[in-house]
Image 1 (cartoon, rainbow, N blue to C red):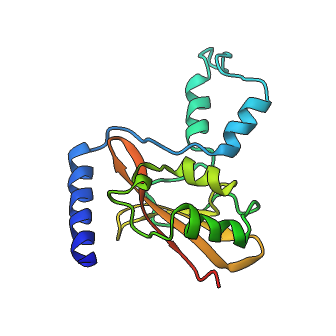
Image 2 (tube, rainbow, N blue to C red):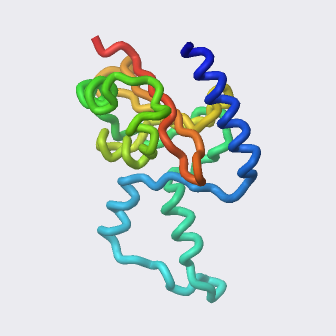
Length: 172
């Protein structure tokens, strides 16, 4: 039954992605970049060297603070220097997400990257586009044990990248 559900979800995701086409990138914004933006004076609206306001470039940097290529299947570093504890990753997977690995039809299906990153307290360690799922995959590695990790896969629904699946290493 799980395989059948995965196949149906995959087909629906592919059809949805094809139907939506390239309507723009609803990139994730990191909590760290939000915090740093509120702590420093805004430069939005200041003229750039060409005399044009710099709002567009500021907005692009806000939406993609790690300069990720969201279509790349290569592992891309995000916040390698800031990692969550093993206990935080365990609590997120086992308690906050109630030990689930699939989220279709649950209250968690509307969660975004920002929701998960805010709960964990730091941005993901790595990002890559997962062609097999397909979706955006974010992975957190524990600060005190690189063998412990937690990952989420997001798929686009209604122009927003939402939680589809999660996986974790053994927290024993």
